[in-house]
Image: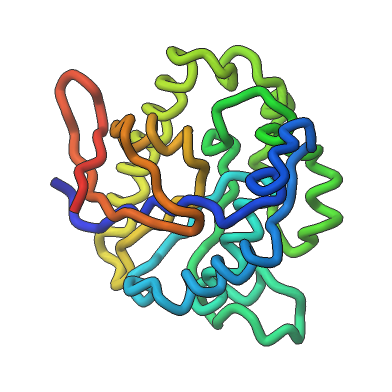
Length: 214
């Protein structure tokens, strides 16, 4: 078992969660969703242990991340003069491998340029051509999603190892309800909006890196 915890966070309430219009492309949070994310930030007990925050690059997950972890993330990720973020705060990484499983428009991200306009302080260089395709590696097929989740777990293990000598050894992962089932290895997990669950990570001879509930 490797020291350091991984906290899986489900995004807060999004517009499509309410109106059930799954044809809406990459919807944003509702006003209630914004409140849920802010509440998460006030109540999350491991903020002082976080060395890295990783999020799916869909609008609702990015918004959840920025609203929830203003007391954790470096201030460079926020508008200058906003008073948000902290000096020498945690790094924020956008990982397309954390996107939701389905190929519905609501679970398909926005073009990189559109995201750069909405979130000008973030680095979207991780969004390479093909991340929006919902084909091949990003297909909604069970085997493809399982492979993607396995890749993410392997990278999480490497990132936890990289933080082993830091005072802030924990990692937050902000993602989606269905993909979380594959990532956690628990098909029954069903966190509330802006809910979270903590894990450690270990190597398994048959399955590679696996998450173990704390």
